[in-house]
Image 1 (cartoon, rainbow, N blue to C red):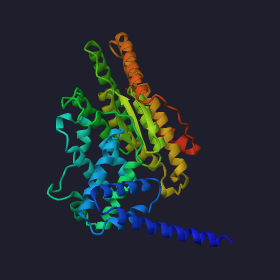
Image 2 (image 1 turned 135 degrees about the horizontal axis):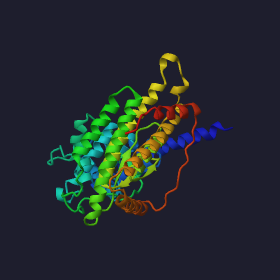
Image 3 (image 1 turned 90 degrees about the vertical axis):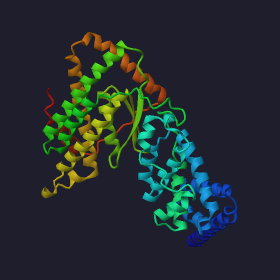
Image 4 (image 1 turned 180 degrees about the vertical axis):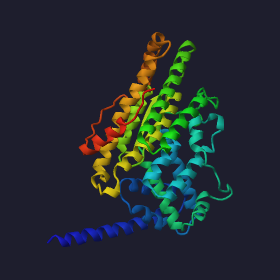
Amino acid sequence: MGKKPNRAHRAAKRRARQGDADLWAAQGTETPEQVANALAAAALATAQGDAGVAGRCAAGLGDPLTPQLEQGADLAAQRIIAQVLANGWLPGDIEQAARRRVDEFAVAYLRDVLATYMAAYTPETIDDMWREQLAGMRMWWSATRPHLGQWADRHLLTPVEAATTVIQALGLLVQLPKLELIRPLPGTARGTGSTHHADEKALTRVRGLLAKAESTSFPEEAESLSAKAQELMTKYALDRVLIEAAGPAPDLPGARRLWLDTPYTDAKALLVEVVTRANRCRAIFASTWGFTTIVGDEDDLDAVEILVTSLLVQATRTMIATGDPAIGDEHSRSRSYRKSFLLAYATRIGERLAAATEATIADAADRERLLPVLASHQARIDKAFDTLFPAVSPKRTTIPSAAGWDAGRAAADQARIER
């Protein structure tokens, strides 16, 4: 009894798919505007979960690759990318999201879409972080011909494959949620003269310590080197806040997004959180997309980014080392064990980084003057964070493996972090 309705349902879906293709062919070939509307509609359907609509629309529009399709693709892409950027997404964020959600062809197409969009702005009106993230995204194609055909030739794609990729790329863009605007939009930046003057000598010393930490095969030495790096960063930061307190009003705090690779992104986000806390910053994790936004002074953000990158390498290496295939320890290679290991590792490292920071502050020569300056500094960071994220809710994380938790804390406890 149940099979006939199922057959009828499948037949209806087949007719609907054919109807889609006929609709694209009938309505989407006359003008670039119609093509742009058809591509936008197909992108929205893709974002809503219709995985086959991109191919069906492309079959109706993409063979051959007409001038209307090429111009319509440019129209749709530029309209959608403008909205996404206005919604707070940075070029680097879009590329990171694309690398996680679509294939390499769609990633390449979106890079070109960004390059086209940015060509309308003069360099002095583009924020420094935007320019850093746009490095390598350039208009390589000839302006005498439409982009899409040249792009398809470059990647050896058929017209239908190219149109399918365009829809899939735009489908990603239309599902990106609105984010906090953490950097000025193109055309509104105050110029290329940045007030961010990081002490490159100090950062070079920190990077040198962390490079040694990443290269050693001894966890105790790695964590001792990391703690020394934290001590240097803290000393540099304390000198800086005292100098800033004696001068004019400091700049507003900055913000950055750090993207985390799967798996175990929640455990890695905890590691980011403890590092930001030890360096006078605030952090919030967007679990759906896999990035953490950190708020703080630009120099502190530099320090956080450098230290997080290194500690993630060290933590992952140590985690893998605990699961030695030679002894047949299957549990130590399970997801529950490794997640618990990283959570425990992050927790204990956070305790040690905080202790190293507190010890450095306690030993400061001008401690009585320093403490109220640090309190004022933290209040400024908290105010900026609360302005960007007025409604923050804590998230609980379960520990699925007691053995992994114990091993993670043990690995972090082996560090000799005394100065």
